[in-house]
Structure formats: C-alpha cells, structure tokens
Image (cartoon, rainbow, N blue to C red; front, top):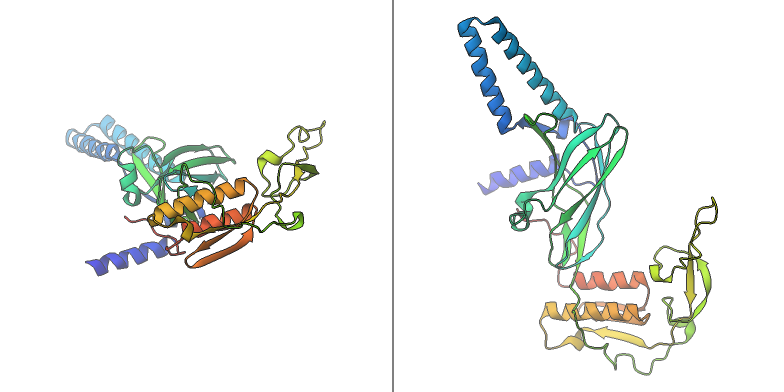
Length: 341
C-alpha cells in the first residue's frame, strides 16, 4: 500500500512540476459535475423517460433544450479557466507565528472571467483551515484582456524554510452545474525567522569594548547627523527618504532623494551564542534575533557567532537579512520543507 502511494505521489509530482508561473490548458484542467449538476442530470433523465413513455413532443423539446443548456454550461465552465496565465511574487520572509501573504497575479488574454477561487490545499493545511474555512482562500474576477491580483494568507509556521503549499484554482461559473479546477505547485519557498523576544535585555556590554571604529569603517547605516542628499538606492530605509523633495514638479516624474548620514563612531559588537546560556534553543534564537534587530536599528556594526556559523562584522540591510536567515535555519536543513498532508 505504501509503495502504491509513493508511486502515485511521484506520478502526480511529475505531472505538476513546481514553477512560479502556471498556464492553464486542457492538460492540467479537470471538470466534473457538482451535486446540483448531478441532480440536474437525474431530473433530465426522468423527464426524458416520461416523454418517451407518454410520447410528449413538448417533453422531448424541453429535454433536448435543457440538455443543450447543460452542455453549454459545461463548455463555459471549462473555458472560464482555460488560457489563463498566473505568476507568483516570491513571498517575503516573516516571523514565526505570523501569517504570510502570498501575492498572485492572473493574466487574461481573452474574454472576461468570473468567480475564480484560489485556495491553499486543505489536505496540507487542514490543521490551520479547519477552524476557519475562509482563511487560505481568495476570489477573483479577471477583466477581458486584463489582469487581476489576489492575496492568499498562509498559516503561521514554525521557523525554517518551507515549500509553498499546492494551490487549487476552481470555478463553477456560470450555472454551478460543473466544477472545473487545476492544481499549481509554486517553486518559491517561504523563509520564517524566529520570533524576536518581546522585551530583550540590553545588548551585551563587553562584546566589543575598546574597539573604537573610525568613521570610514563604521558602516553605511549611519548615525543621526545628516551630511547631504543622494539619489535613492534599492535597500534604503523609508525613514531616510526626503519626502518633501520627492513631490512631483509639474509633469516630471518624482525624483527620490535619501538623506546621507554621518556614520556612527560606534563599537564592534559581537552577538555570541554563549551570551544566551541557560535558555532552551528556541529562546536563545529569539533573544539573538531581538539583539540583531536592535543593533541594526541603532546603526551598529555587528557580527554573529553561532555553533556552526560565523558572520563577520558588517551592517546594512544585506547583513541583517543574512543574520536573520542564519538564525532561521540554525539546526535545520536549507532544503525547503514540504507541507505534510
């Protein structure tokens, strides 16, 4: 039985490979009657048998008219999904215990589409969706030759790197007699950081005592003294943007300017695993995560020392993300963890 299940899983995974784009065709679209559709078919069969038994010409006409409407409904339901293109914006990392918004875009090359549902697979997220069936779902209408954007909220997950769940696209438009659906397995992964300690103690005082840094080596995050303005660069903090100067002038597009700050004359700060002795592993990671964010907020140069990882002194958003990723994956595999059905 286990062998049969594993073979089925391999076949299903090969038929639906992971990708951040998805094109709906006859190959990956499925359609079956809904419960009202089955009752409709049963009623149609009874009506046809009665017409045959009683030789009712109007009964035959009504039976064939309803059968044609049902077939047209089936074709319309299938066409409501066929031809759509979808893509995924890679999700941003979140803290453990926080929901992760998954942003999806639907591109429609043809006529308008209505009543399209996107749902995280309940077999993989049943522990999360059982209490609230509306969570993990979103609905969209896509205009003709247009686009639509929907957001699906994923559940709160423990720290680590998680593969995104299988998404199901479904529609019952226009009459609800048939249900057409398709599966999409995104390739991106979701990184979940440790939840930072709410009230951490002050930064370790003796970690870098006496290591005064010159202004040229103390980092680019800067202190409080403003030196001037420079053009905006990717990764700059929103609080450093000069918003008044960014206002559009006439028809010209706005130009973003960022305050250039004087680098701080700080100390080299080392955040060590040993500084959190006496706590369990998750609590130690939570404290280090809080210290990393606190040091980054103060514009300090800091390094991180973990049992099997050493990150040198640095500062900036790139260094912050590297430290948080190291804390998120401490003791875990860097291969995305698949959701458990």
